[in-house]
Image (cartoon, rainbow, N blue to C red):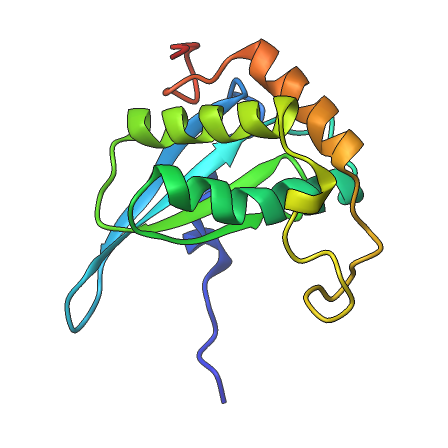
Length: 163
């Protein structure tokens, strides 16, 4: 039988989602593995919680694009996965990249999505490569990226310190 987890220990459930000011990049945690290695977990918050949410097709396309675009701009990317609330992503990396470097990589990636990515460049959009290949929208991904970029990325979740 699995050990019961104290849900109060889940960091996201302790964050005051009414106090943050999106868009921002926030370091959630740095953890050291039991046999070595350090990973960092970042909150890439694109939209203000409880005020809006990215449609699933747009979020899905942003997810597929960020999987590659962030890896070309930031060393050690392990995974970039969307939040169920559809307001942003978790970014997991090896090591301890600076919040400013993550924010810069995210900003550059969203700029590329907003301005130059073509449908042919969106990876994983076939039945073989995606579990829900019909639920994509490059148009939506572009429009959301533009809106998020216009707001500017903060390196602080509670005060607007835009990079």
